[in-house]
Length: 114
Image (cartoon, rainbow, N blue to C red; front, side, top):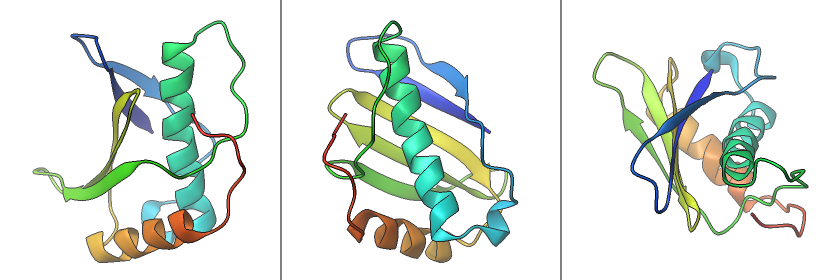
């Protein structure tokens, strides 16, 4: 799946490929959703800091929304101080995905924040 990233201070968006999410979105679990969100944040970090290794990711301090996509499915959009990222579209019910994201973000995470 691809994620489109806009870094603060840049005038263009960059698309990066996320790996590791193999299942169809309609069968996702909270683990899959966590992997997507962490992948989006990691892609942002790697774009901003291409020569640095990324570390553990904490899913806190981000704004998020699930939006319908005009051609079908839904998009996940997140924003942090570094910039914004949009991933999708995914063939999954909007409310189901919103609930999964809410659960994932409420769960304890590591102390490192990008």
